[in-house]
Image (cartoon, rainbow over all chains, first blue to last red; front, side, top):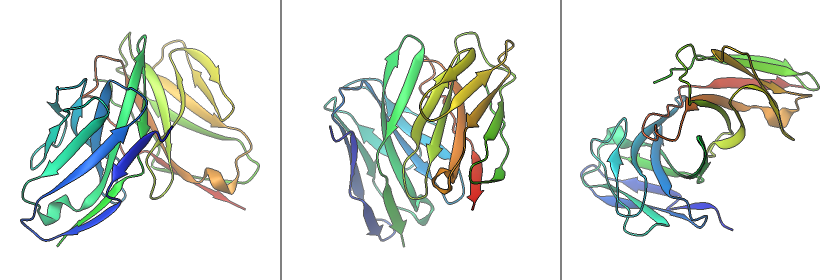
Length: 114
Length: 111
């Protein structure tokens, strides 16, 4: 089991460029999440998905779009990158057992927007 | 939505027991309490989860009083490798969009 993987690990963009971050999980989890973490801060939820074909906005969705065409993949897109989107992006997936949820995180993608 | 409050930072020494307390005064009936650990340049990692009383696993213990308005993560005999940020989260399976990590507690272990 690879768990949660993220591609790429690091990327530098110029302002206005676009890119897609890929998250893949092999645990058959229903829920998937995209977070961003700025230096010295906690994680903030960007978008999430409760199942294949569904997406929903989190706390900071502006400037990002997502898609969940396959259960195992969750894509995060930046249509026109801005310096304020410089951050570390973490993907997570989770399963539910009764009322309990445990999230499994990927290693992160470091994004620098110049 | 149950907000959590935890100390910004804590220091301790190798071999000591460390207790990190989290306040969640507005915890709802169905909410469970989860703690995550995050090392620099890595994603958070699940440590322990509980609903009431005491939960223990191979890594830590979680103490939850009867009123559930707070919880304490206990790390026995810490080592340098326990230096990390620890997050306390409160939520249930209906609040996928509402689980908030906050800034966590930065734990520094010294030799």
